[in-house]
Length: 304
Image (cartoon, rainbow, N blue to C red; front, side):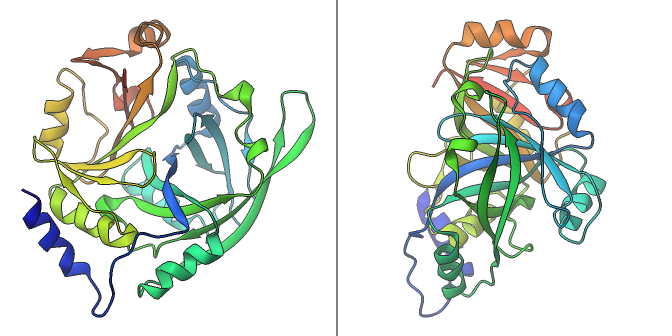
């Protein structure tokens, strides 16, 4: 079953280039969920049993603010537009066209400058690297700074309609704060990012080219692409396949093409079910939160 997928990757290959896994980009770092009302979204995720960080505000150039939901080794980011800028035009366009939901996925960058040069050598023009920071209020009341250096793949290179970028954390201690990493719903880490598309093999081949990871066909016809290291996988699948994976879960709010769901590992499904309360839906071995109750993103909690 893998042979057609390997051939499909070739449509993206560049003559004279041999695909070698990127050395400065290592797997999913965080998932960005765009929301219309940032504070209301944070309140919603608190009701779902997540520990939500204090609100962060980015630079005037970026015009955005965020809340983070920290796991190990990855996290979720609730991102909202505070002021319209040229920088956040793609995010605003996403909200206008799609509404709330998974807008982009970040990889961990060991070195963003070197990572940007790696994709440039593959014939892609990176956006950045860009340095920025935001103030962080720590649990002891002191204010520090979270500092980052990021680069993005070209905006048009968005397999399944989800943009990708890489994030180098200069101050991990102000992001992975122990007090923020324990959640009443027992969420531990991101296992999979599910991306809906009418053409799973084509979209998976596109991502495979961008990050030099081999796609793998799954039993139901979906196609997975490992993100690298011990991090979560990308899974491209049709809406029909998504519905069959999570029967009984309303998919209202999920578009035919775009980020659809986050599969989260739970350390205790009984605790998950209790924390989610009426928002949770049992679906096979998973406990799910429908997109309509999680700002456009289906959340599926599993035991491992």
